[in-house]
Image (cartoon, rainbow, N blue to C red; front, side, top):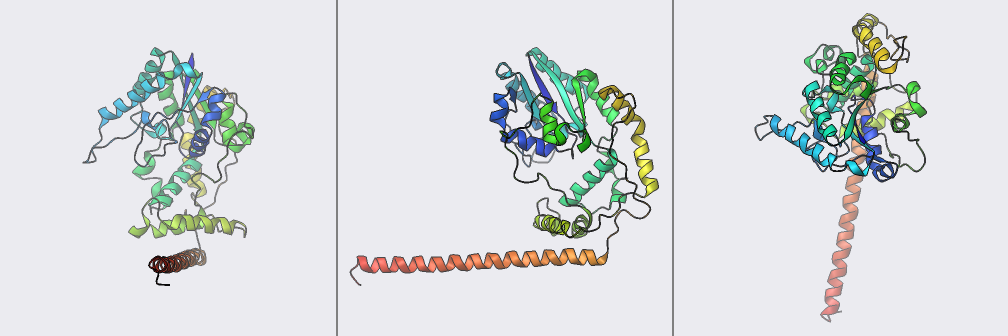
Length: 373
């Protein structure tokens, strides 16, 4: 009997890195009995590495109206394709971080997926990585600022956008457990000290009794690198200008490079997200639920889910950056942009020079052919 593992996130817990790794190592994973299938679906703006997105994709018509019936049809088609492969491998893995927050992925819908797989002779298990809620909401905010948002953190945490994210882990896990059973939910903690092997990839592989070895291909770059501190604040301020609000605008790579260069000099200031009182109140909302998750899913009688030290940040506003830092960062952006323009101009000039040379050679060849030389 095969087992289908659905990796549901949560977002901001290394999901992109896991998905890229599994995609790059499909062949080797198959040799070891783990299939990370490409089910052949393509969704606008969604990486093909997210092979489980077909189970919870949003599909819209030309008027931007959601086609919910079609969404369910796509999910069923994906399951049919998957069940056609079950005899080939003992383990299948589907991954998509949107599943965790997607309110349409209810107990009923997960039960439907489980029953479909059971009819074909497969078990279904869910893998979820949990990150401490204060760190997660900061990362959510930072990602949206990196893309296009200019809302301050203090305004963000009380907004509708923040309420979209399912931070009550116990409640969400119980919804999933009602469909697949607690015994079929694998909870891992997104903390380096709690990873098997010291990193997220080793930890993920260990779930399938695999060890990280040199035979696996590693990504050459950080997947979805984060902007932090003063560089993130510079992006937030720039987002007030519509030219900077596209998800992949030109300034993000430059700010990332500036941030990395500054690390060697001690880095820019990181700013503060919460006052001490706000921080304690925020974490208290989730304390009992987290303790229950630790006991029910990890067997920890002490109720300790997260082990990293909680650093209180004192009083003050969320963003505290100096004018000098902002000017320094934006000045470097201007210089980098100027250097890119000069480089492009040099490349264009070289191409024109080569083009002139080629034209001259063609003219000489034509004259020789006509006997004029």
